[in-house]
Amino acid sequence: MDDPSRSNHHKTCRRYDLPGHAHALTFSCFNRLPFFRSDRACGWMAESIRRAREKHAFDLWAWVIMPEHVHLLLQPRKFEYSISAILKTIKQSVSNVAIWHVKAHRPDFIQRMTHILPDGSKSVHFWQRGGGYDRNLWSPKYVWEMIDYIHANPVRRLLADNQFTWRWSSAITFEDSTRGEIDLNLNSLPDDPRK
Image (cartoon, rainbow, N blue to C red):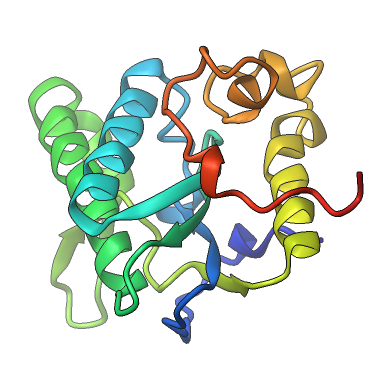
């Protein structure tokens, strides 16, 4: 499975908010810069996911925060929902605190977060423009394949020896349900049909 977040250009993302579907979401930092290389920034992301889950009522099945992108696997609990609204809640919170932090503590870095439009106007971004990547999943087989894909990210990138040593991933919770930075809703996860 190719990493869909590697594109540097602005893409539109068509979303299908279908009841009972899980969503595999991928979204990247502006210009693929490694904004999540610090525990502080990863902590902002984890807190934002927790708050969004409370606000939008979704079950979180898997996640990983990589240095320059994030993968989430979630299933909304409501019949009617908006993945766009969920993403906005998650991304806006992180963006606001990160931009404030950079302006206050690293003003020299703000230029790397600045997008210059053709008319010369400027805007500061934490996230890559565009919708990221959203894949609807309804089969337990594909849900479990996506969990494996998400958890293998740090190993594929040679950032960890195995998936259980990467702190900013739900793989730790799959190994030991009492550990991990974000609690999972494993009670709603379908059984793995490969076992």
